[in-house]
Length: 364
Image: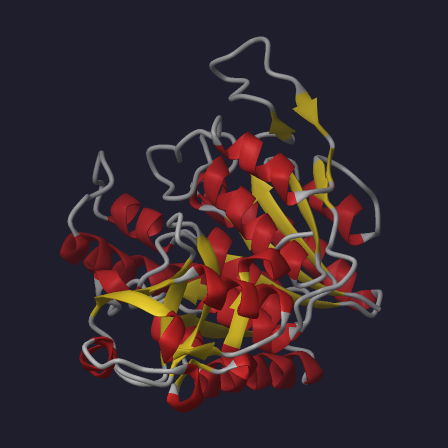
């Protein structure tokens, strides 16, 4: 038995003259139902609400302002769920709509609650259908793409495999639609490979928000959590069916041999840092090599406005991110403390080791 998270993008769900959106969803649903029959569990992360809303309004271009996007999502979300519910009902399965945004996964309590709810739905034999809460989320609470959301959902539930369905057959060294010399990549084993590939990653299509770069970012998040990631061609349902049967196709991103674990994955990826703390060399050494907490004496400067227990980035003297964590002091308290001469003997803890994850721990 495997726990799968499958992500389907807008460009696939819009369909074409030969295959309508309803037919596309029916094809995917048949694959998911077959996987459930084999004893697997499946969570579907789907885009498409904005695209369906735009189609219903006969808009020729996707809106660019947030209010119009939210309104289009409100129109399309009901249509999207109705199509999935009808398709899965024909296979004897119920579905559940789960709408998430950054505030849901940025709170440790809500992150745990979301994980528990998804697990309970799976235990009941229901297929959770997850989408970003585009209708009400303000810009600062939005991920902007469901690739990132799918990776966070996969880590939250401890999935075995994440499938990112797209409109190309695999990852390439460059965009094959623009560069005839682009070479196919079937295996990615190290984050440094992803860093090199991101430089050549293309932007999303006219109706999608996620390009190849967001899929690479999703692969980073999921593989760091010990999850195998497949980037595959979603235009042909047979590809999804073969993957769910344990086959290979497209590009495989191999998992970290020593995963971060649920809590550190949350610290590293689910939180949006609200501020930045610059460290001296001594503090960096203590964090990296002695497993220490960050003390006030090691802080050189503070940027941003944040309260206690809110996420921050920790930068080394060269301005490179060293770690992320939850600050036990607000930005105002830190600014005030910087004006006071402190020794290590009476220096308060700024970020405790238990709520800190080193950037090097996110890689392998």
